[in-house]
Length: 488
Image 1 (cartoon, rainbow, N blue to C red):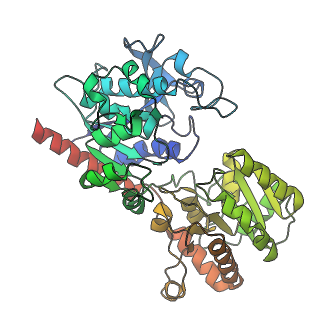
Image 2 (spheres, rainbow, N blue to C red; image 1 turned 60 degrees about the vertical axis):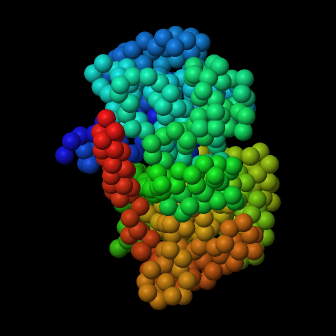
Image 3 (cartoon, rainbow, N blue to C red; image 1 turned 90 degrees about the horizontal axis):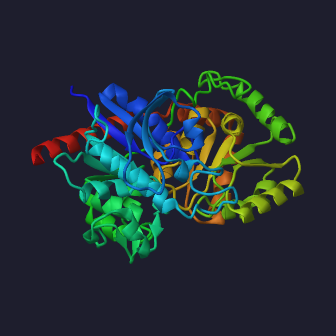
């Protein structure tokens, strides 16, 4: 089978830089696609966190576009990742996060920072790197959304196929119209069928309008975003392009997330021997200052602390969680009002509620290995990775019926239990009452030890890795490449 060359373009990739699930996907896909004869090189911005971990670095091009300072394209490796890195210190060499400063305010030049990334991706697609040219350019989220546009409005004989993946439609990258001249597009690109979006520059909209194929990260989300309720203003465009839109579930790296070998947890275990989980529960309780009580149910949440994730619903459900005698562990960071409210709840209920603000990779593993059930009360969820980790670790997921949560968790209703199919609890979204009822149902099932153990084993047997998603991506790339060949 012919090897296909793919350029993956993204603003983050695990383990180099991560703010959310995008990084996990971008970091895992290259290895997952290799068995399908798909060779991936990943283009990243040259943040300090990326530059500091590069090996075998070689300059392959100096970039003439006038990004406001000197810029070069580097070829390098980092672990298993084969990288191209846009080294532009004036754009990326700064303290803070990839998108915002230490106070959480977006960098004022984000359009320039990520337009540069997209422009370089398009140049690579057209042959910037003398020794390598991709068959497909795969852009991830708004930060790479202009790459298909630069290719569509560019010149030259060879244009690779383009794929645009939406990881979360809520983040669209819109900027004032007066920024358009700085982007280097021809005037006709500022149009309904180009980068214009309600009188502004729309980076994600441009990718959705101009890429050859569109994907998002679950089948249910691909349907939801074509509705007014979930389309975030882009539903009309997505309905128009439905024929080239597909939903491909994310996976997780099952070598990193493996309770049999996880170095972060107190006691390894597997589906045949789940009893050591109790030691992990005690270790988690001890680390976070919860009362160590083997019979007390422990609920967990590992998430961004935002409205999308239903954190206000969780806060409203706290009296019910206290009433049923459960403990609660929360790990994450997000909106200041939610952080303060959760900290206040922990202070008011010592030994019962523990809150860790900030993301801690080791602690995330310990939560999955130690809690009885993981709460995911999202209002919308393109795919979600935390529930996949929960399934892998036998932490029963309690999820809202939206997006990828609906696609990955089988509700343990009576018929499902009778047929041996339930792996979690699925409830109607956006309702405190339904969240409380779901928690109560979870704890009733937990009291039935035999049923609970069977659910845990089924959950742990659920295929959550990249094998099937990688097959779908490989088929997509090959179909796109074949179409491009027929056009030429």
